[in-house]
Length: 632
Image: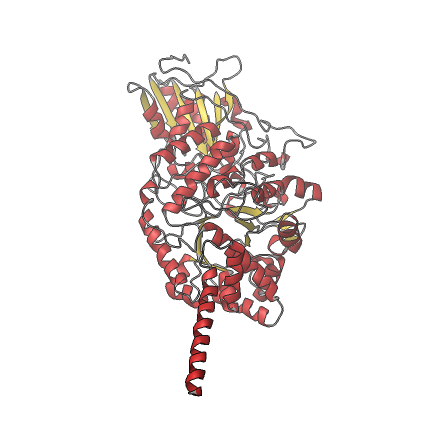
């Protein structure tokens, strides 16, 4: 009888314990519970291996279901140009992300992974997505509401492919156009950059109030954003990418830091550490700025992510002492490490450092808490898998119209008519013969620039959908106006051909990051010769496609009208809209246009400020009626 009683008591105890345990397990899965309680519950259930896995971000080529499950991987990304297959559709992307996610969900605790991608001017890795002007062009618009709308459209297209995390916006303050990433910066002026942090509200949603540093993502059509690259990446010596930024506190906190303060106020979910250094200290190893200032003083409660193999570059040569790099970066305050390939080495290295008490468990718990906080804020635990409900919205007409509007507002008119002559712009739609020439007139890849389909960008018209400037001109002029296209006309072409005017489109070829660093900032050949030839015997407007100011002074006298079009993206029709007067020029220079590279760096407010065109310059034109005849 006593044995039966003991057995009964034991059975009741086991049932009671099981119910408590199940109740505890349910806390982190219960969306009605406060986020911090869910984090505490989940963190208490995690092993060290599961925590280290959450801190690891790997490239999609490694992210098999087995790897996700075995190593408890917390995040996956697509590097520049990394896609499920050539010409992958939105559905292909959704399927790939879901397959990877299912691997993460099959782990003991079922913690969803977060998939990230560089969507820096639209969903630029994906074929047929809308490609918006790069940030430098948006800075020329001075339109923070437009930039918010672009963020909204970008988030929608990113989510259409099943991806919930975008490595954007870049809020660098580019102080030297020789920097290969200058087009990713809205302006040399931090107030313009701060203005454009409305992109965060577009990407993530408008927060209900002061977020007090908490991450905010408002629903299934929004993405977690990532302000980058913290901090001072636009101020490196001589504009050399990933180099040293030498600044005093006034410049650091007065120029390079303010947009991060604004980002945190808008609920930014993540912040990416810069490859560059501040006064000789690598940012990936800078505890004072990553932890003491960003997290403790500014109150940022999302997570800090490294750049691509960023911790490797703490040492010279990179990856030469990886254990040291792991220890230094994690202790400095980097929470999630973009490995992206050597994930086993990273995981084993971090595990070893914790087990040897080199890195305290409290630091690991802080990092994982921040990562989980973002995942809960995004609703990933409730909706880890995506569906096909938005796949047809990729590159939608509505988004392309928005991009076209952005192009119109980004164009800056630098010259309009030679001295003593009437303005050339706007151009007439009804005329005899127009020459369209130049390396960039009929090249969609060139007008989109870097970070488009491939990391370094592409050349040609067969990579994605869009409208070239040549086609835009043809679409705009009267049906009786003859448009002749000569990419590189013969020296005597204009003289022998009766032309009413020429539109010359030249500029930089696509580049990204260090490959874009330039000491001379000249327009590549044959661009200068095309300007000389096409403008010699006819009135001409030169449209410059570039990510930054380039050398123009030698050609200025030969040109009747000059337009800075930056990198306008897929909707070239916006260029023709303004050239032909359907819309007026309104853009203002987001950065100083130098006379000579010998003047660089040169920014507004400098003692020896002697630009070709000053910061904020931009001539304006009024739209004209459709039947207005414009004499040349």
